[in-house]
Image 1: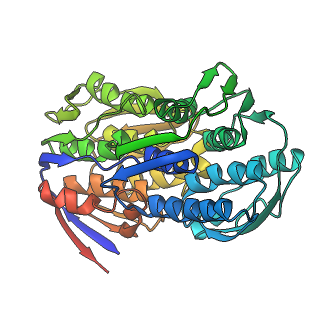
Image 2 (image 1 turned 180 degrees about the horizontal axis):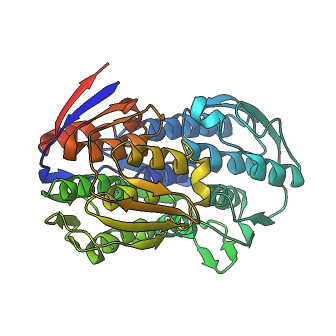
Length: 404
């Protein structure tokens, strides 16, 4: 699908897209009790998690050990959390995924699983996994993905508790904290301090009923769209319940860079006159923030630095490349020495964004196009996390035409 975007002004009120990170964590918690999610928004990643978890639950209920084939689509979160859970339960499974996920390496988790007695046939999808982790005191490198660590937490809860020792450096700690916070709010007792995580045995099944809160980083593309077109937007439904404090940082970054940016009564209010101060931000703790910051860096002239970008190479696309090429398509200079250095010299022009098969890159290209026009190929990628992205922008005044 192609998105043809004409210069527009983004104004109005819109409801935030639900956090797929929190939604998937709550869905995995359903293996531990009664979790009912009201008004769940069905992005591709959420549907992949629903299907995978349903297959695991049916296998557990049948007292079988062979899950069969699970297709996780393009959901890296589902895959990375699922692997340790299968290993702690001793379940056999063949896992498939789409083209983008097949390219993403699983070397670290394979090495760790095999060191703990679990067989994994490949360090890329498709793969077969079998065997069982018997130890309740484990060590794992914290340098690649917090989602493996989150999966181990669920695995230990399903196995009666245990302890995790993280081997430094540890990246994306805010997402480990998110997992602990979500589960503790449902009745778990998980203690995360420094390099140690203690997972206490469940005293009773978990219970939750409610809606998934909005996602600050997905909402940040609406915020950037408003600022880049000198408009304003109110984004509702952003109650974090103290679950997404790492991503909430984007609100303060935007505010200290000169825009009106604050959260009040679960609504993020964003407005500005086109002026935006340069920033230097380290995103190692929240790598997905890099694409949002790239959108904000295009608002006005100046130099912007994004540090801690090492994990961007193993996202849906190599985001060091895809973010750089997308910005350059609109006349913005980028260098990638020691992070990502962005310079907006005011040489803005319409651009064409290639099909990177990456939801956040499609959103970035769309936001940039709202200022001077552009074409985004592979625009359907937004359905991975926010299927209503284009409908929302059109409601806010975006002049967007979608073509197959």
